[in-house]
Length: 156
Image 1: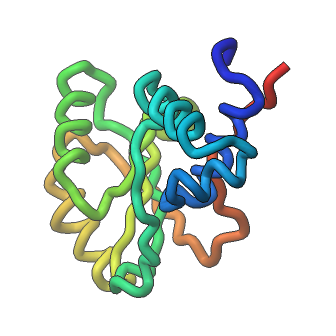
Image 2: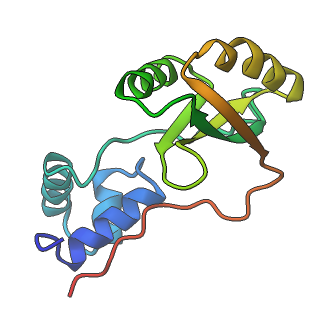
Image 3: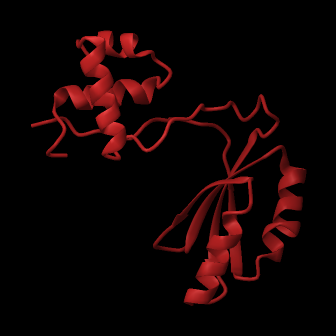
């Protein structure tokens, strides 16, 4: 964070709200002229503060309105089974995020499917063939209370 000043932080905040802004629009929002705004944005990308840009798609509009969080416990804690699980997860498109966690579960996954019948099929025929999984616990998301971006500490 030492390399970021208040303008860099504001650029990150503005781009998290809308990464589709033109350089001119971004510059106006952060009180810079377009050229310095463009250079700062490129430096933030180059230095890894901005990982990538993406569109946030409405899951219901594309037919995947059921969001499930799934806690996974491995059959056994070993390097081989952990690696097998990670490899499998990276090839399953319904799993959009997966975190290695502490506590009751080894991993927590964020999964989108169309409906409960599809989730049942997913558990039996997709996750069910991943031999490293010992158990799973599903949490069905009823509604989103808050969805946001990464908080960025203010410059000192």
